Amino acid sequence: MGQAGAVTCRACGHEFQLSTGGGFKVQIVFCDDCGRGEAVAHDQRILGDGDPSAVVGLCGRCGGSLRLGASPRCPRCRSLELEPGGADLLWD
Ligand SMILES: [Zn+2]
Ligand SMILES: [Zn+2]
Image (cartoon, rainbow, N blue to C red; front, side, top):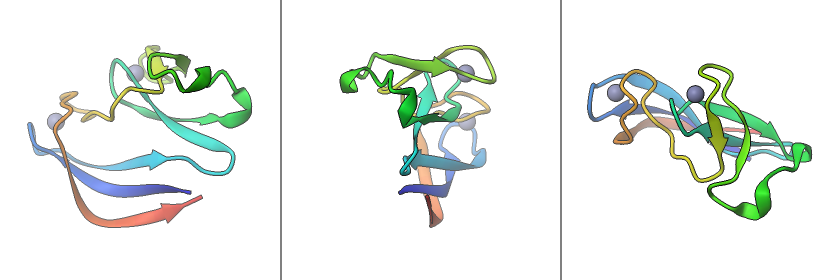
Protein backbone atom coordinates (compact mmCIF):
# COMPACT_ATOMS: atom_id res chain seq x y z
CA MET A 1 0.00 0.00 0.00
CA GLY A 2 1.30 3.41 -0.88
CA GLN A 3 0.18 6.95 -0.36
CA ALA A 4 -0.45 9.85 -2.64
CA GLY A 5 -0.92 13.33 -1.32
CA ALA A 6 -0.58 16.94 -2.23
CA VAL A 7 2.68 18.53 -1.18
CA THR A 8 3.92 22.08 -1.47
CA CYS A 9 7.49 23.06 -2.22
CA ARG A 10 8.87 25.37 0.44
CA ALA A 11 11.32 26.87 -1.98
CA CYS A 12 9.12 27.89 -4.91
CA GLY A 13 5.59 27.23 -3.69
CA HIS A 14 4.84 24.71 -6.41
CA GLU A 15 2.06 22.31 -5.42
CA PHE A 16 2.00 18.81 -6.77
CA GLN A 17 0.88 15.28 -6.15
CA LEU A 18 3.42 12.97 -4.59
CA SER A 19 3.23 9.22 -4.40
CA THR A 20 5.36 7.35 -1.90
CA GLY A 21 5.77 3.84 -0.62
CA GLY A 22 4.79 0.91 -2.69
CA GLY A 23 2.13 -1.59 -3.43
CA PHE A 24 1.93 -5.31 -3.73
CA LYS A 25 3.69 -5.24 -7.07
CA VAL A 26 5.56 -1.99 -7.21
CA GLN A 27 7.61 0.38 -5.13
CA ILE A 28 7.96 4.09 -5.74
CA VAL A 29 11.60 5.01 -6.26
CA PHE A 30 12.82 8.53 -6.94
CA CYS A 31 15.18 9.84 -9.56
CA ASP A 32 18.43 11.02 -8.03
CA ASP A 33 18.64 13.81 -10.58
CA CYS A 34 15.20 15.36 -11.03
CA GLY A 35 13.25 13.74 -8.21
CA ARG A 36 10.63 12.16 -10.41
CA GLY A 37 8.95 9.20 -8.72
CA GLU A 38 8.71 6.02 -10.74
CA ALA A 39 6.96 2.80 -9.85
CA VAL A 40 9.47 0.00 -10.07
CA ALA A 41 8.15 -3.54 -10.20
CA HIS A 42 9.27 -5.74 -7.33
CA ASP A 43 9.87 -8.55 -9.74
CA GLN A 44 12.39 -6.33 -11.42
CA ARG A 45 14.24 -7.32 -8.27
CA ILE A 46 17.36 -5.42 -8.77
CA LEU A 47 16.30 -3.77 -5.57
CA GLY A 48 19.88 -4.10 -4.46
CA ASP A 49 19.41 -5.66 -1.01
CA GLY A 50 17.98 -2.40 0.26
CA ASP A 51 21.22 -0.56 -0.45
CA PRO A 52 20.16 3.13 -0.62
CA SER A 53 22.70 3.89 -3.33
CA ALA A 54 21.57 0.99 -5.49
CA VAL A 55 20.30 2.05 -8.91
CA VAL A 56 17.09 0.21 -9.64
CA GLY A 57 16.09 1.80 -12.91
CA LEU A 58 16.34 4.77 -15.21
CA CYS A 59 14.24 7.90 -14.99
CA GLY A 60 11.65 8.15 -17.77
CA ARG A 61 11.98 11.91 -17.88
CA CYS A 62 15.67 12.77 -17.63
CA GLY A 63 17.38 9.41 -17.97
CA GLY A 64 18.90 9.77 -14.51
CA SER A 65 19.29 7.04 -11.94
CA LEU A 66 16.41 5.83 -9.81
CA ARG A 67 17.89 5.09 -6.41
CA LEU A 68 16.31 3.44 -3.40
CA GLY A 69 17.68 6.14 -1.13
CA ALA A 70 16.79 9.14 -3.29
CA SER A 71 14.32 11.63 -1.83
CA PRO A 72 11.37 13.18 -3.63
CA ARG A 73 12.07 16.62 -5.04
CA CYS A 74 10.04 19.48 -6.36
CA PRO A 75 9.58 18.86 -10.09
CA ARG A 76 9.97 22.54 -10.77
CA CYS A 77 13.03 23.62 -8.79
CA ARG A 78 14.33 20.28 -7.48
CA SER A 79 14.20 21.42 -3.89
CA LEU A 80 14.10 18.73 -1.22
CA GLU A 81 12.11 21.00 1.10
CA LEU A 82 8.61 19.67 0.65
CA GLU A 83 5.69 20.32 2.91
CA PRO A 84 2.85 17.80 3.04
CA GLY A 85 -0.59 19.27 2.71
CA GLY A 86 -4.10 18.15 1.98
CA ALA A 87 -5.58 14.75 2.51
CA ASP A 88 -3.59 11.65 1.74
CA LEU A 89 -5.08 9.12 -0.60
CA LEU A 90 -4.30 5.48 -0.16
CA TRP A 91 -3.56 3.52 -3.25
CA ASP A 92 -2.54 0.03 -4.07
ZN1 LIG B 1 10.07 24.03 -5.92
ZN1 LIG C 1 14.98 12.17 -13.59
